[in-house]
Image 1 (tube, helix red, strand yellow):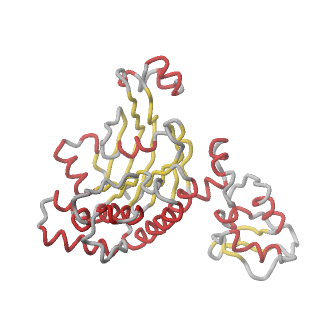
Image 2 (image 1 turned 90 degrees about the horizontal axis):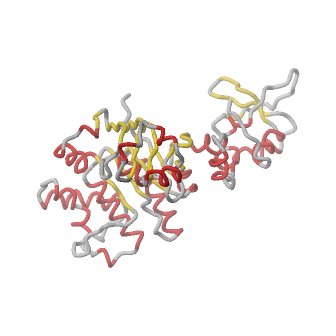
Image 3 (image 1 turned 180 degrees about the vertical axis):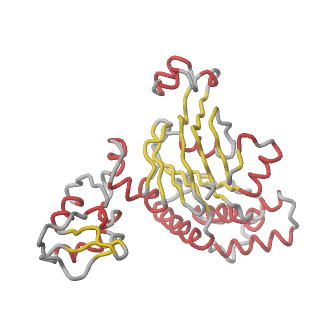
Length: 344
């Protein structure tokens, strides 16, 4: 299947001589060396990835890693220096101004950290703003706005103004505004980072619920690992504009690509993320096994009591096939000692 988003060898270099960097020895310099030599900053460096339909793809990294620049390049809010971007197989960099406006108005919606609500407009008109830009009549757009407000749990707030709402409610309005145009793709640029922790957690749960209900393809930018692990089907880790690792939450926690990712995931409770697949070994000849197997996709935390309480190794199955066994030693080595693992 054609990916919803395909990014190939994407570069974004800021500076007067940006076009002289890509494809030359200058591109091999570190960010600091490049700035010292040319005055240019490579915010995104040779990044490639695909996002599949219906996937929640999280891009995470520290401040200055290039993640916000990357997401803005996807719809050319920031013009890339070089590389290819396709959305549903259509080359974004080849789009003329009219086609690009159509992409932004109808097919892609963005939710930003700063809500950007219109203070002089009621909630219903803020939500319907994208539909108004599309030329849809007032009655129809208000009807659609009301439907989406119900979807995000804001029934009864249609006629309030933004300053009458809490921060979490304002962000729900921003989310409803993005959903109102029924886009194929939703881009989130650190939308919850300014919210209080409890409200932030509620909004993460809201995104998970909405994704389950409407199934949109989502690209979510964050600097928070917990948020990335909570939301992402796959996570891309950026460092100084370059892609360090792309993988599922399990892959990042269980098999970090380098010391940088290892430091990121060091404090993650591995038993809450990894499945039993990561702690299997081969059964020894004539080894006695427990009678009831454990599915390989079971989260380790859910098997701790059983594994620690058994005096025999427990079979681990994938479908009808036994892929190995696990026992106390394997569990403790993976969870307590943080021993690097390779899944079966």
